[in-house]
Image 1: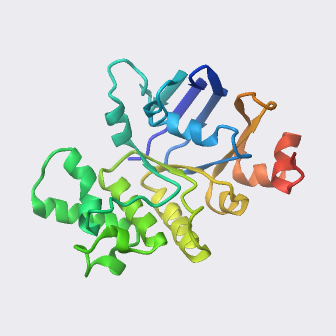
Image 2: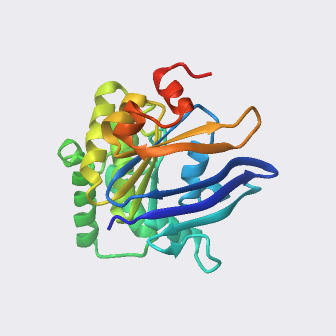
Length: 258
């Protein structure tokens, strides 16, 4: 079930370097929120703080609060693994498990959550592949390697793997940057379909993509060279792209940036 994320006063560090500073926002349930901004301004770092992927990097840490429907995801008694089960992630490059079949790729997350009857696993695999708009393309070759699919199909397989465990939130870090335009359109259509079930957050460098698929957009920027990234503005996507409040946002969107 889609849930709301509320972030308050979040700072993220790599060792002594502060990557992002004082980020506060509400990410609405059952919607698509896009993060835009120049390279190196902390968009992907912030995305990874939402499911505690940030802390897999040695020396990385976070200050501030991330709440999922009122539950503090950084509370002392919360396991990072359980956070990542609630908040799934799809990465920039498709990363199906290379030695596993299409079926095994989707079932992998379920196995981590404990064994279940094969008939139930079959049902979840089919439902997840249907959810990722991939079932009709692969139903006759489920035992073939996932790595044998095209790039766009591999990315949809990774989405199927992520939604198989029924997370509340789906994070996508530039999910289309390695894909051709037709595959990109398929992923965008899929995001719009999935937002009724999941809260979706995407990082994208593609302005048109943010404008096409997202309900709300946050613009990140650096205060200066070597300074931490900050959220400059966050609003309804239509407003960000037609009548932003901040000049820096307008400059970035119109290409007059820098």
